[in-house]
Length: 412
Image (tube, rainbow, N blue to C red; front, side):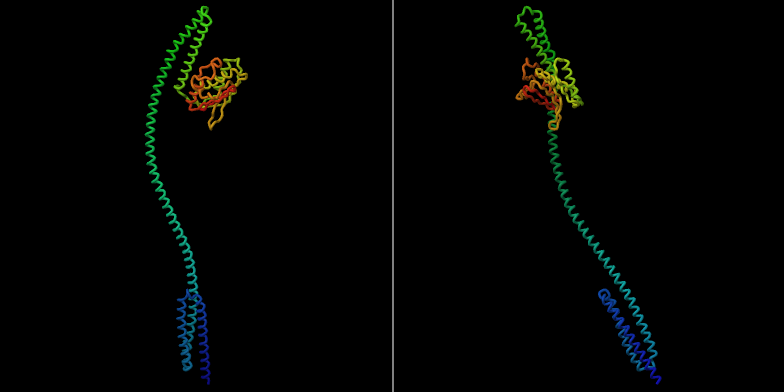
């Protein structure tokens, strides 16, 4: 009886051991179900676990056979119990290994995710690099186009340089011809100047001697034979003497005018205001009875030849002084103004004036608009002024109105 109860108790323990294995199997299946959510990434591990479960199933069959064998052969149950305990411990070890394997799979999964994230970043970098390369290629294409345009432009420039060189050679040839022409003109001018100097010498010496003889003998006749001559004869001698004096003055003016074209110029800054003031003071000393009001703008300087400019200004002031001789309140003004961006100087008077219809003749030698009895002179003054101003590279012009005065303008 005791033996039967013992066997019954042992059978019960075997059944309980079987139920524990089934619980372990369910735990493993639950774990596998959890792993199934990572089906794509843990497929290989799942197959490995399935193989383990298949081994468990086979083991379960063996346990069942062992149970049946234990029921049939209770005497050998103790040894079978030991094997079952070993199997249980093996199952526990397998489950522990499965937990470790799950941890390793999770770490592997995280590593794969990190790799995927790194791959995404690398992909983005590669895309950026690809876009940069495409941009570089586009820039290279544009640069190539620009280089082609530059090359064509350089070829065009070279063609233009060749044409420009031909034109420059043609210009140089014309310039050389012009230089030769100027050289010949200078040689001709030098020859003309030499002839003019010879003429001036002839006028100065050969013509003056007869004039002096005529004037001298006429004066002797007038003085020594004054009582023997009637009034008509004396008047004729006076006319002869006046004519010789006028001709002498004309010769002097012509010589002075010719010297102006040959005189060497020394351009330096000079005070034109001071020059006009000095000329005006000389005029007042020469004719103190005249009360002429001078208005001179101070501080007018210009780069000019001092001697030539004094000659020009003296002629202008002389004209203004002369043509204001019949005015009650004579006034002579010297000043400046701007015309077309250039400083223009002027000498203005309130004298007799003139008709502007004859303005073009006034700068020609010996051209006069007034009679000798009205205003004396040789008509060479404004021609002299024109020569001086033109030698300075300037221009001169005149404005006036009959009875209201005259203004002469000039630039340098």
